[in-house]
Image (cartoon, rainbow over all chains, first blue to last red; front, side):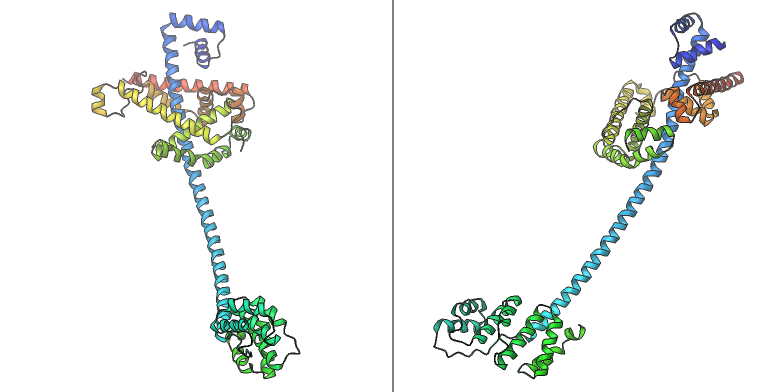
Length: 247
Length: 190
């Protein structure tokens, strides 16, 4: 095969021949069996090259893909494992904090429940007032909501003002409302009789205990113990509870 | 990564764009093919790589200038290739003579290289294996990817399109020489 024929075949296969060269190829295909055979052979060889080249490229890329994909999956798995560890750590910390809080809460709640008894120093000449008396009965029966409504409605016509405040604050405390209880205890004047003030300090200490204000409760209780008021023994005993030692 | 960045990376010959495509869309296409077309994992991987090869050629050729949703494009190519294979297999089974089907089963491909004579395919294979990687690449890019000489030059780090053209011509000549020598040698022996 001459160089010229090779050039024509190569150009023909590339599709880069001009019009004159194309006519020459067509003429040669008709006249030369060798030329036609060679062109057909090279066409087949190129088809083969296409198949084999594609196969090689595919094999190379597939190998690369599997390697990259595997490492990406491993890194994703590592990342998600890391995220799981982080989430688990956070959950653990939250749980510990929550349980500690819960245990603290349940501690001071439990101590409060053990020491709390509603104010029972009601001094009223029964029969004076039916409505107020019904409030007292409700109070003694543990119907604090009803009793509270009655006490707030009747005012201090039939009872000493400080006693009424103690009753109302006691109702609130029994109804799990230490904030309102504290408001009514604060209304009691420092000039009130010692017994009333002793009650006031004791219930104020219990209200603070209920609210978890351990330090303030401790100060009040220590005062009660020092003043040797009617609640000194109770206060002293309460101060020995673990909750006050831990703080 | 946008299309320009992908093209730049492919032209630079680094694997960044391909790795990006593998990681971002590989599992998406493969899982979808397995789920929606009941492909085996191996077939799905094969189809995905074929679609990446197809995409790569088109980007290098400049046939794709704008593209939104590369994942969807790749999956659609996979699906088309899957359907083409299915069609091809069906028509091949129809054409396969009963006797061949009986002996070799339905997957038998009758006379793949029927156009080649006994030694031609062997000679072509031999010649291809004798070529350097650079020669294989340039021939592949030109005849299979149908890339222009300028693009090939850029892709392969050659000085210009003319250098690429000369290199391709030389490589192709080597290829023919190796094939002819092998063929002559074989036919002389027999």
